[in-house]
Image 1: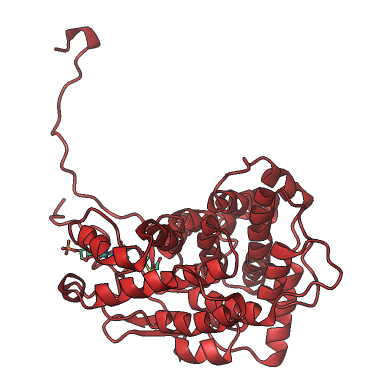
Image 2 (image 1 turned 90 degrees about the vertical axis):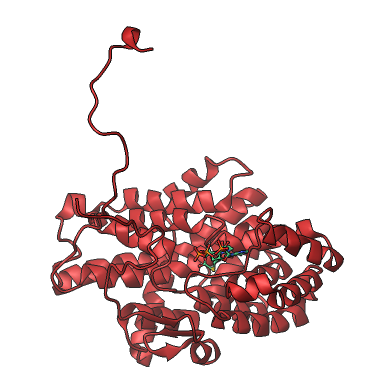
Length: 401
Ligand code: CMC
């Protein structure tokens, strides 16, 4: 009653106050807890940035060591998780597997479930409640890489690898993905660093569709495993985290740089989708895209250039000088990092997983903030404008015309 206009797509609806990530889409600025993304990408690491996003300040050496130890110790999975993974078809999309795996974790930790332990398990704000929350945070970040690597290996028909000791977060991930039993296997330091930077860039991006989904789900006070699983499902779509996979499928379908102008014309006629371009918030270049380019240069020195690079660059040049894209302020977003993942040898349908794993950190930072917000959690329940029929009376089936 009284509502006249729906805010379709939430273009102008703020649902929360947040101290986590600042974006100025007109100026192309992205800051985590006040720190420019450019500084963090050069000086920080993914795990240090994870701490920053979740707890609001850069950690002391001691705080960092405790955080890293907790996260890495929680990278082991219960043997029951293996049974779940083996139930999937060989060609299951890894995002489907990961989404299910996160949800299944909720069934394994009864002590993390507010439906069983008391609805205010995470919202009391006392030491026990914060400790309970942080334990789930360590678990979810620690297990994200393990579950992702398991999703990869089950599809390759390979045995699972126990998370190794003594490697960095991304180093451990690459080890779990790649290790085939060689005694002296170590991940390439250049690729490990590159993946760390890409993880850092993907760690948070305020209230995108998936983060909103996590918070909407968590607003009913469900356990965080279910909420993260919901976020994963939202991220999977090609307009969001699935775009890095869609970019490569698009480049493959274009075929060669010569075909780019014709493809762009089809996009302008709305016959084709230009994945990796456009953003709800950025109306100038996505600041992450510059760091992606620099990272690509480092990776290509090791892996060699990807054959799709020329087509991608031509697409960039043609689109950026075309009135259609200029008028609509459409520029490349972060999803061209798919070219790096391809060069590193990740399978195409695994790219959204490489977005989801680091984004778990952002989702959890927002979850923690919401659970502790002053005044408690209010369930997210938007309104609609009803445009259906007014009251009508039921007609028995044989009397209907
Ligand atoms: N190619 C061609 N036209 C586009 C594109 C594109 N990629 N993106 C937006 N437009 C047009 C759109 O058709 C509209 O034109 P008009 O005003 O004539 O109808 C205008 O630009 C404004 O776009 P919009 O659809 O209102 O923008 P939105 O904020 O609702 O959608 C988006 C944002 C990211 C979903 C959209 O730009 C898109 O579909 N991009 C391609 C998919 C993609 O790369 N997604 C990843 C986003 S970045 C990482 C992430 O957050 O996941």
